[in-house]
Length: 171
Image (cartoon, rainbow, N blue to C red; front, side):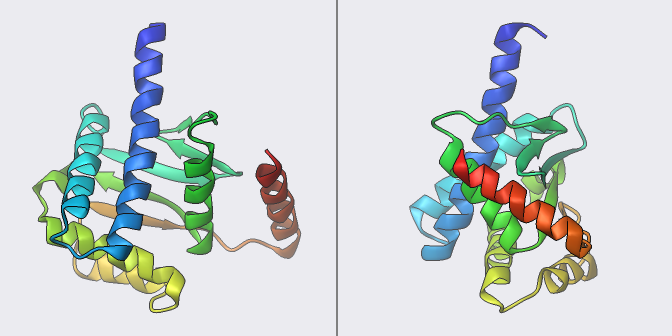
């Protein structure tokens, strides 16, 4: 891969994190018919389409204080650090290890996409558990997204995670 291709690849990964997080936040405060929400869905879908052109799905995961997109660790940059940290916190608050968005998301109505985003947002408000949302996705046969819950950690691993998180916040 040439340096230009690597740069484009990295930029696409930064774009999906920014657009996904922006959509989640915009969906929290605006109605579904708001222009900002509709533009957010459009940007997000374009990123998913671009990143699934060669793969079956887009994987967004969190591991050891890093965001992993399609098995590539997203590099911290000065202008993306805040969004990366916010996304890490968002996933951590929901006990979420990752999400897979399948290419078929482009065939789904905006209302269904926003319903999922609002459900994901509701997980931290104790309205739903992540398990409840994952069960609903499975039960309703929503095939365009897969929720990956964090496995239970033994107490000694929780301490290590807290130390990792403290070190990440110092960066």
